[in-house]
Length: 323
Image 1 (spheres, rainbow, N blue to C red):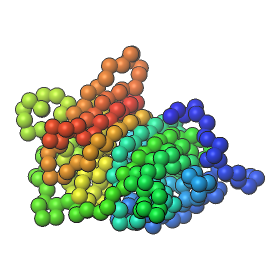
Image 2: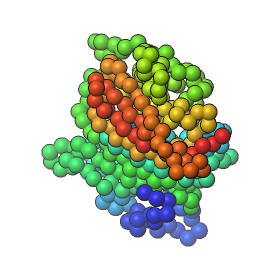
Image 3: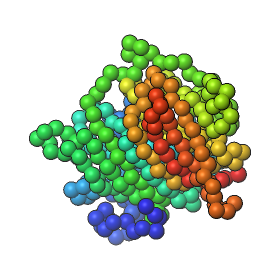
Image 4: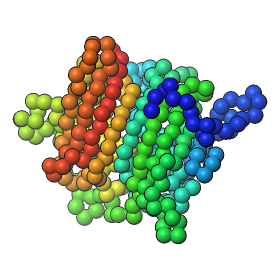
């Protein structure tokens, strides 16, 4: 994915003369919350959607200027993780609306990558109205006579008006609903949070990296994952596994800690979710800053999550230094 790549012709719909590129989409109300796997209406980003062809779609998403969790970066840029959440919601909506996935199914992120153009995701005087030109490129188990798909991959270009804002690809696994986490067992105690300022947060309740219990782990870029089922955004509703967005937030916070004291703007992220994380088993997060060719380059950091001695999550994050 590169911001120099043209938008595929299959994703382009002719518009009336003098109409803007977003004229066929509306941003006046949100999608029904069940279509994007959200409980709180306030957390719904998708506002409108169209089918352009058998596997081509156009969706609208509105990014708030002051989201209480995905807050602006350095007071200047929209949080790039809004790209990830927009892709996640778009994939769930497309799966339910066009490929027959029941609303009670469980959605798990298997792979996610995105890149953004910093100059196009700057804050403005109004919420950003984003257009997703999307295509379902891999729908597995989509024979409706034998049930809904078991996995779906959505690729999308993001545009803000006429400007290319980024691109992304997300693969969702679809499974039957399971028992909510904590039913009959509860959660382990939360580890102490690292100081919020180190990971770019103001409130320790938003910190997902905990101080390791072992002295050896505290000597490097290692943390215990803090799994707070009461968090209103990361745990929008009960689930029997750790949501993928928790791990993406852990990756972002790990990159911020690795690049301190500079504030970072993630501009590219490529992640693989190897198996679902159980919420009642400790998970270790580790970060390694990769060498740069020169001081002017963006920082590249590899972040991993380990549970029960197995690699559960692996992410490469490229970030610009803002301060």
